[in-house]
Length: 132
View 1 (cartoon, helix red, strand yellow):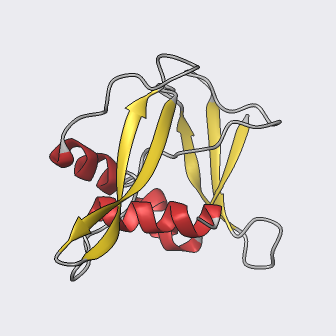
View 2 (cartoon, rainbow, N blue to C red):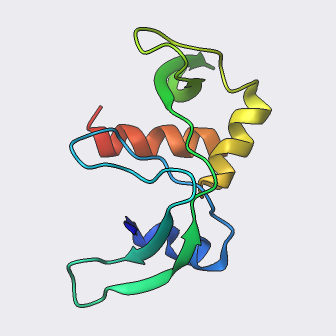
């Protein structure tokens, strides 16, 4: 059984089944593999911990996320490119065009807001999380 904790901003999307993917950094702990049973929580190790549901992992795809800055009307904004990690020493094929990346970002729980598209919201989230 693999347990995943989600930030509160994603909890309702996970509980409803609308967010059915997650991005996790490789590290010391092992992650789910296809066929593994998952327990999904928010607020773990707090008094407000709640179980969001259970699921079966259907697939695992290694990816690399590249966050860059693109010029737009005199300013720079963060943008994101997602690659399939086919090659451990480099980048594989991009996930797709901006529409595919936007769909990927929305499937991961990010939504467009005034002045910022879904993939921009995702880029901002990972920059903040990684302190970039």
